[in-house]
Amino acid sequence: MISGLLLSLFSCGGESEPAADASAEAPKSMYADKREAADPMKNKGIGPVKSVELGELDAAMVEEGRLIYEEKCSACHKATERYIGPAPSKILERRTPEWVMNMILNPEQMVAEDPIAKELLKEYLSPMANQSLTEEETRKILEYFRTI
Image (cartoon, rainbow, N blue to C red):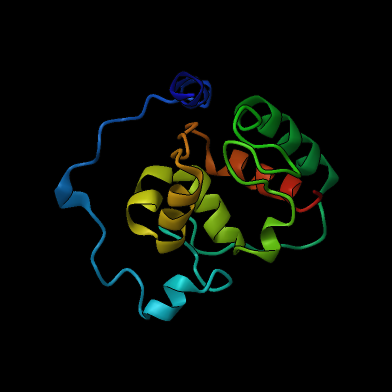
């Protein structure tokens, strides 16, 4: 059982970067209102993405996002079912686009400081692996998520 869990952690990129310098931590007032932090449809997460405009679905981005997802994410996430991590199907009904992108781009800080990410870690017992994706790649994955 334990060896299976360890194997699953390493298959998702289990090694992590050393923790950032404590002086670089976000201020405790990251969220103006604790209710905003806990409300999954208002929480934008912690990271570089502050705003995402979702327009018409971009088919080319969807396909590129699907390919990136299959290469980088599918070891731990299945599109429509619970696996090592949660299923991204209908994720934008549960989270803001900014939160999703920040979780992909900045998983270490999100799991350490974001209340929703902390709860997900408690539930799934496996931290999100940082795949070192760019904002552009992450946006393409988000576009793919809009279709599943």
